[in-house]
Image (cartoon, rainbow, N blue to C red; front, side):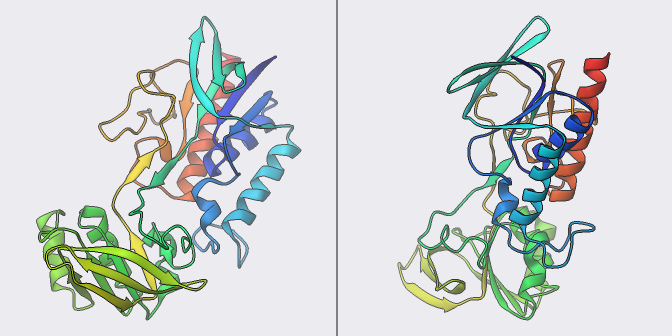
Length: 303
C-alpha cells in the first residue's frame, strides 16, 4: 500500500500536518513510537496557545488535534521509525515491522530537553519541574524557583522568570557561568537573582508538587536542602534525529535544516516543528510548521 504522505511524530507539528494533509484529500499515515502529543503532553496548563479554551491542558489539546485527524481520514500506527530511502519517485519508510511506501515524508519527531538525571526529576516533571520558562513562568507568580544551567538559555530564562517569581536561584556546576558576558552582567545586577555555583542538584523533593531541592557543592561535598516551589532545567535540548544520520542535512547541534517552506535537501521530504533549526520552539510555531509542510506536500504531489 502506498500513502500520499507519511508523517513521523504525533506532536503538535505532526498532528497539524495530519489535519492539513487529510483535509487536502491525501492518503495520510501518522507514525508515533509512543503516546500522542509530544512534549506538550507533559503540560497540564496551556495559556499561550491562541484561542485555547480556559483551563486547556496539553493532553486535551493534542487529543482534539488527533480527533480532527481522524475526522479527515488520517490513519495512525504505533511504530518505531528506523529511517527512510528514496527509490525513484517513492520513499521507503523503514519501521521495526517492515517498509512502508509514500510519495512524501514529513518529519516531526521533535526534540527533548536534556534532563539532569537526579532523583525526583522525572516524577515531578510538569508538577513544578519545567523545561520552558516561556510556557510556565506565569504559574510561579511570587514563588521561589531555581534555574539549573549556566549557558545563554539558562540566563535568558532566569531573567524572564524574574517578571513573575519572587526569587530566582541560578544553580551551575562550575564556578563561572558560560553565558554571554552581557547576560552575565544582567543576571548579576538583578536583585531577584542569586547564585549557587560549583553546585549540582542531587534530588528534587515533593509529594505531588515540588517542595524542595537537595543541592551538593562539588568542591566541599556539602549537601543542603532548600525549600523551592519550582525547578527550571536548561542544560540543553536533544533533537530526536534517530534514523536521519547521514540522510539529511543537520546543523552542528543535530537539528534538521529546511528552507522557509519546510523542505529538506531531499525532494519530497519535509521537516516541521522542534526537529528543525529555528529560533522559537513553542506549540504555536510547531503547528505553523506542520501546516506549511503539509501544504507543500500537497503541492509537490500535484506538481
